[in-house]
Length: 633
Image 1 (cartoon, rainbow, N blue to C red):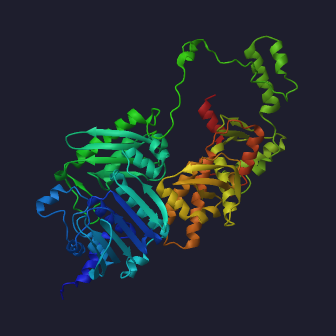
Image 2 (image 1 turned 180 degrees about the horizontal axis):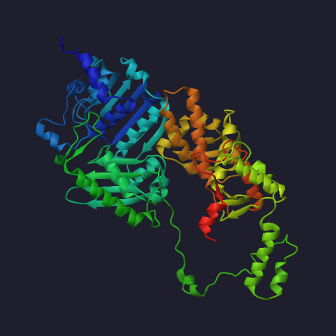
Image 3 (image 1 turned 90 degrees about the vertical axis):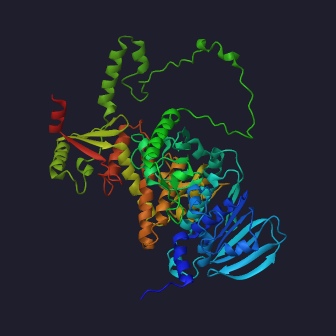
């Protein structure tokens, strides 16, 4: 039997299309504020939007009658005829935002026009006005949304963690702030100011406000103007791409939109410039005639249909390629230096005769070994003769005495445990030991350790071996659920994007449990006071380390349905794999045979010495037969 749904139920269904989470409310209210001509927009959030979302603006405001109409579905001032849909230049136009919000939350609205003496205050619940009073208030609109989804408990139950919901709110806040540089924005969460963005003169300055100077320095200008579309903004330097897909924004006529098709065009332009798993950042603004696109294809207005989509794809691809080719590999100059004191110009007279200036020469012998009694470099130099012949003799002496220092490592211990090479190689090692010979260790190019077997050679990749060793040591410390922290003698500061800063601060305790002591230091900046004790002797790129932590925390936030214990165990393992991958890449050009022996011993003491945490091989055996084929001797 067919029947017409009651208005209350139909409103709830419509609300589900527009209001999916607290960030949806922030988006709709901020867009309404900007459409109203506001130059100041303030967003106040409590409990990541679960209990309060309040947006205040100084826009044009509404009359009492308009305020009542604003909560009705399809009540709008943006369009009046079907032809207007082809010329939309505002954010909102359907008249669904306030109606959808009022259907699933308790709303208090205070609004006043400049010509009115008093403001109108409405209390709205379940899509109807419960009370209306006259109050004193400044020009503009103040909308407070409380107890979101109070009458839809199923939807409230499926909200993510506070950190995840706050990150989504910050994303929506950022999208609007990037398009309106003349507007002052402020975001407050639980009485703490997360953002205060005064008006700026250009997009670069707004990016600096939101994501920091480090993010802005990575960007390359892009600009192209054709009869079909104009594209301008910034794309990221391929040398500084990151593993997380952050800071990727596209706007058309000031409206944010998502497009997998155009994102593919950007990725195609970076073809063969980025390793697998790395993504560039970009801030792209499209300007196109409104009648050549359709923004009315999705309730959230985040998808846009273009008339000349394939043409725009090719233009975007070419524009990004040109921008990368012209600006990505050239040294950048930062001109946004307002307020920085000027330094006096250097006297250029001293450079006129610089061709006659020579650096000081230091007379030294790179082959001198103070511990080698049998080969004195000073005596050799004084004895004269062919320098090349003397050097060759010295190297031969080093080869015999120290270049292949004899190791006390037992051959069988190298392959202790279940070896993938089987018992034949183990027997070869034992036979070699019985003959009284011991394995030498040769470091090749700072990248490989090569040693001998009776049946051939064994090559160990130093970086991958260190990755496996550090990973297992770090995982052992994490199993205690409270990894030891090594306090830094000189704490390091790092400037983060707003999203990453909020994410790290929300998970400060979890980060401390895995061995990092991070503390806030100003706006979107943290100080690293301590790192895991396992990494105390390693060189750590602090910004890269924080990027890896933030990327893993984002993934963790999306796995709320998993059991807590399983979720944390997977998080620790992924963090360990990411961090040791960065640290192990440090070049090791000064290894001596003793260091090589220690690496080999530590590697084969691991539970799985043959592959890295990401599955790459650490060890390779080269048989005599393979050597014969390769050398053809």
